[in-house]
Length: 226
Image 1 (cartoon, rainbow, N blue to C red):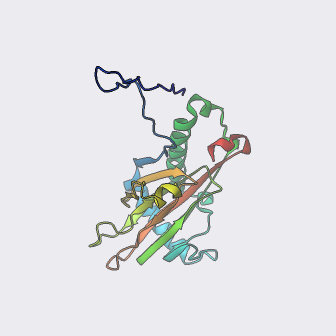
Image 2: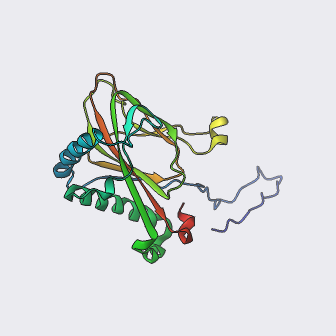
Image 3: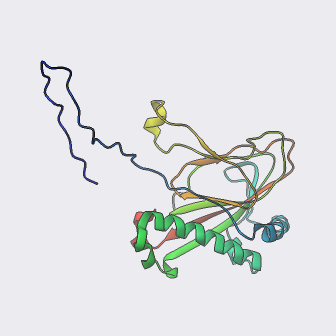
């Protein structure tokens, strides 16, 4: 977009200076974010919940990496052979495709299946579980699907917290602050991999919260996406 600079009208004896009215105010560096309640969730979420809890018992690569009282599974969920995993793949693909088209427009049609790499893993939060601020710097898009969330007395427990990625704005108190997303089962939230985010602690009166996190990366010729 071309912005034309206008000079202030010269002051005159007849009154105060006048200014042009066609001066646009643009928003720079807007962050695309996707949110959707996934169709078919009522059928597949109970199945995914049980699959995740069963796998937690035998997953030798599960770890507490980046979390507090939160267990992250190995990043192989999309290789599991089950109809509910196929459903999950469709939901992730829909989020990635929607975000990609928002950025690239019709050029998104040029991205073939061989250009896309995806991975997913489960995160199981128990009482007090949270996730420290972090990014997924190797991915173009990242997201989370909420699988289960026990009711709690804290209305903001388990919220996904998007942090302003502009440190200078934060330092000068020019930021609008944290944007929060509620952990509603069946809801998918997706965003650029560079977007800093964290998860507020699960309430101590809540037994369990389960989410599936994922990344999408593209072939290097689509590096402008990452």
